[in-house]
Every structure is written in C-alpha cells, then in structure tokens.
Image 1: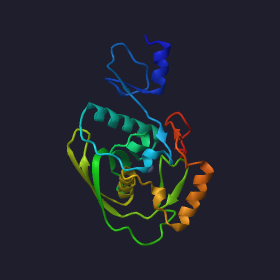
Image 2: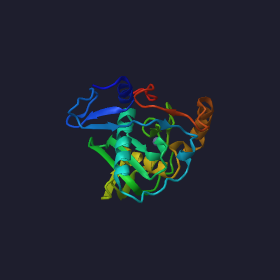
Image 3: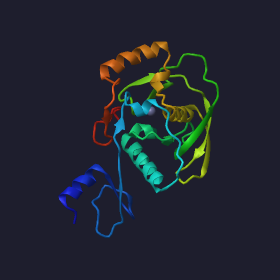
Image 4: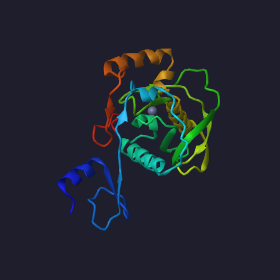
Length: 225
Ligand SMILES: [Zn+2]
C-alpha cells in the first residue's frame, strides 16, 4: 500500500511499472519502482536559455537518468524536441521525437552535438510552411527561414557516436534544438518584420524576465495539443 504522501508524489511524477512500461496505474508491491520525473519548462528570459550549454564529460548513470527525464518531459509536453537548458540544465544535450517529411518517426538523443547545415536561403519565410514554435516561448509561433539540409554528429547517453542527416521539417528541428545549446532561441533569429511582432508579443506575455516556467501535463498545453 502506498501512503497518501507517496501517492501525491507519484501523481506529480509519472509512474512507470518495471514490467508494463509506461503506465499511469498505481504501483504494486511486486513492481520495480522507477519514477521518471517530468520537469517544468523554463521560459524566455531565464538566463540558462541564453548562454552556451556546457559539454558533457561523464557518460554516467546521472546522464542516463537526465536523458530519461528529458524524454518523459518531451512526451508530456507534446513537443518534437527538447534541449536540456529548457529544463534549467545548462548541458549540451537535446532529445527529439518527430516524423520526418517521409513519415518516418525518429526518436533519439544527442549529447555534445555538432551540426553542419547547408546555406540558409536568402528569401522570406513562408508563413504557411515555415513557421516555428518553441516550448520555451509558449503559445507563440513565427515564420523563420532555415537551412534545408543538416548533418548532426554527436553521442547518445551511453557515449556511443551518433550521426544523423536530415532535410526539410526534421532538419528544422535539428537546427532549433542545436541553437538552444548555443544559447539562441528561434525568436532571436527572426527577420525584421517578424522580430517586430515578436518584441510586441514578448512584452505582452512578459517573456523578458527570469522565473517563468510551465509544467507539461499539469498546466494547459500552450500550443493546444
Ligand atoms: Zn525550443
């Protein structure tokens, strides 16, 4: 039996039974209890989002745990990618879970990634086709031109090398997440026209000060998913 206190902890951390995998059922005494934490997502203005992330030097159990938490948080947020600074951890890690333009799902992790991109076209972004959003800039989206092709080299959480080449939508996700690790958010890259609109919205939402965050799975989904 679990106590009320334990139950309230479990309601705020997602519970995973050892055998059944992801589950929201209550723990049984025979289960291997693995608690995976969903972390609050910090919002534009929080200093950790605006500085370069530190490289990982130890591929240890703590890293494995952190990456698990990041995947849990990404799932709960209905996002397609999440970088460690977005949960307040200034480390060079991002996770992703999204379909590419060919309907193939990619779920994975990059630790200490290096991204090589093709040239960003010098044309205006198409608002219907090239609009981006960010979990750390809740409820807003803006058009942004991105490189069409990228290759990302890095490691997974066990330290094994990972290489991924992508184009289109998926290449956009890779650039967005990689940017987070440089301390850059997509709204920092907007062209003049969209930057003006962003500045207004930023003021209106108070996305210009530290201390704001939201809790995936608890607070209303800022993108209405
Ligand atoms: Zn983002």
